[in-house]
Amino acid sequence: MAYKIDANVCVGCGACAGNCPVSAIEPKNDKYEIDPNVCISCRACKSTCPVNAISQ
Image 1: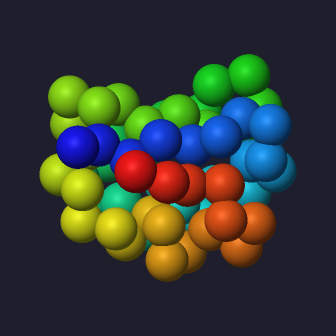
Image 2: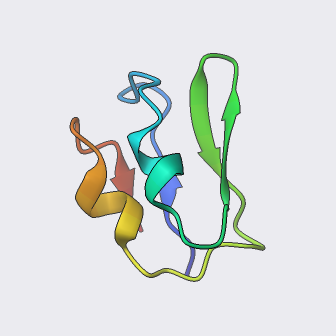
């Protein structure tokens, strides 16, 4: 199951996108969004998010 970014918590820092090994995270409206069709559920983004906006 792909991870999700809570837009209400995301601060738009981009730390998650820079750490994604498959480039599944893209900016959208000053926040970030994970493409569930590309995400491999490796948790790299989750461990990088400074505000804990990412969950499965």
